[in-house]
Length: 127
Image 1 (cartoon, rainbow, N blue to C red):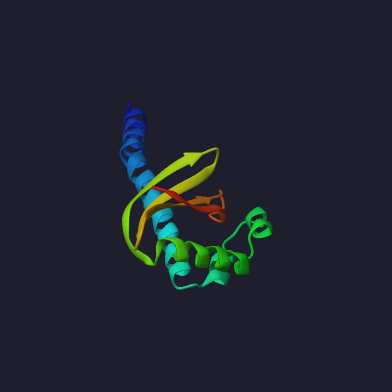
Image 2 (cartoon, one colour):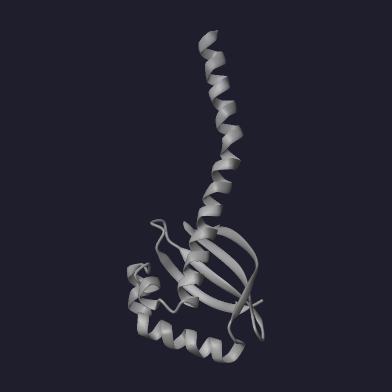
């Protein structure tokens, strides 16, 4: 009987901490996306590109990322503030959406992280 109680207690602990673990993982992913945003604002494109997975690295160089960021700032102005954050999991990829207020427009920054935490996708879309 004590073994059964211990098993039930262990199961209850797992059930209790499962949402906590998930929330911590989401916070980590959101913090990682915020770090990427800060690197972009500081124009540290090589640091951002260093976090790309191999497919992303083939598709977007640090130099090209800098050009895209420069055009984005020309269109919407400089970054002002965060409007919110959310996460989702899709087919083993963690997707973080950060609402970003720029001088002239609000956009969503969408960052996809693969299973190793590398950037598998990065884009800005209308909010």
